[in-house]
Length: 455
Image (cartoon, rainbow, N blue to C red; front, side):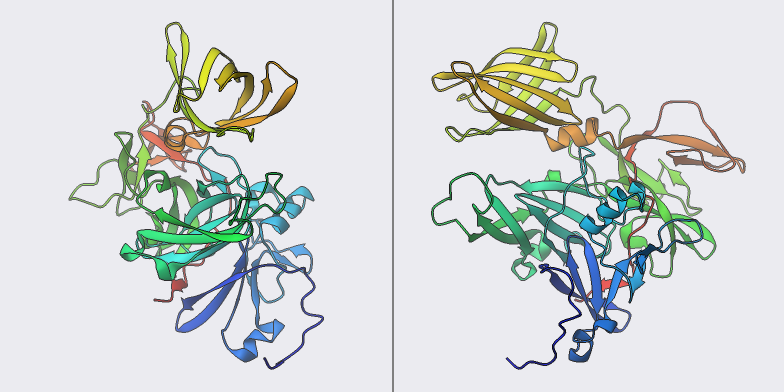
């Protein structure tokens, strides 16, 4: 190698693994460099790459100050003098009281409405979904989709989990099959900081996964944009937003294809921008919302994917909880796990597990679709943790705290529209909500619709 230029004073941060991708911006080809949902960009030529002044960072911070727009909100944008702004740095701004939690550029949530930690990962364009997709995480691997490579990254779902340390996943898009329907990602699998013993032949080795994007669990809530185009306010889905549209906000999230089973119904956007249940003339739906009647009286009901942290036996089991006139019935996915003495009171559960020749008392608390608890072996003072996660499709369409009712509103001009909250010059029409959509957890729209995939 030949030394081109030394920059000892430029790099003042510790090593960060980043994954560059090419994209098109107008007639220019650019490189996007990203790590943990922090983004910088540069022109891919040697003179630019070795010149720190040519890099731009997507940030709202300059000279240690948060730049704000006319509405008093953080003004995110590409800045030559911007401070690096990934999940770690933005969360520090929140904890320091400098940034409101709802003003974060990226707020990752699972379908249970719980914030998700990031970890390293990769972002790639996927022609099958016509979206940018991200694979990221540490131990737990997460999948998310966005309309532009910088976002909005919001709802995601877990696609793999490990007892050992698994990190730095990379989606190898050159291995994609069937126009991107099947994707492949790999990461480093190692004992590293995990307490478990190393796995022979796999300790500090690469493990590859195949992921089929037609899986029902990957049908995630997508942003519905409210945008101004040539003086008209429109509701648009991701592929409909133009580069010169002024995006006013994201009023809610909804599915971009029907949900499995008879739980969703289409929602349409009229020519005047109003939302409607009637498409007319075979109009393509804007999105799909969850039917109002899809609900359950108890957040306990349904399937739970559980892990019991005890190395002496297979620790994964799914339990199905069903209410009856005489109480609750628990059915395990494996006959190796036998449960008895089940008690559910409020947000607490306790049950006795028989496995092999031993018995264990399991107790846990239900927190927004996640069980966190402890087990104790009954014949000796040995304890450890166990956890459970509500099966995604049960929770996503029934219990997610982010699901909010959509109501019908009558505007003063006599037309009707649908919205989560009151809109100007309108009155709420009586009746039950027409459906449910997912609320937007942030006040920002982190997107750059001028960034196109380099095909």
